[in-house]
Length: 122
Image (cartoon, rainbow, N blue to C red; front, side, top):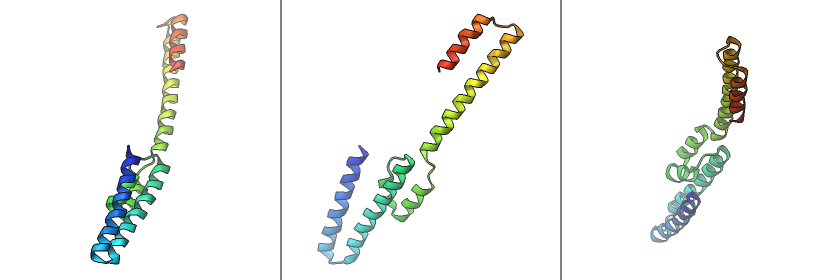
């Protein structure tokens, strides 16, 4: 969905820049259109490398400020690694608690093995 919007914005920017240039015969209109295109694609490339959607729009609407915003945004790829590591430690914590219950005699060996299988299959 966003790639269609990105293409439409690119077409709009080019057409708007050319039309405005033909009406005013001002080179500034072309520079503004080029500015939007350059910052849009720079933000898009950085955002994709970080796993963030919508980088094109940051560049198109804010220009260099959008580029700064996208550069400062945290990467979504590193969050996945953190979540995976925390789930592994959660499994080990659950197994340790389960082992403590077994050693105290609260649960039987069979119950321990069943719960252990459930935890390891998560």
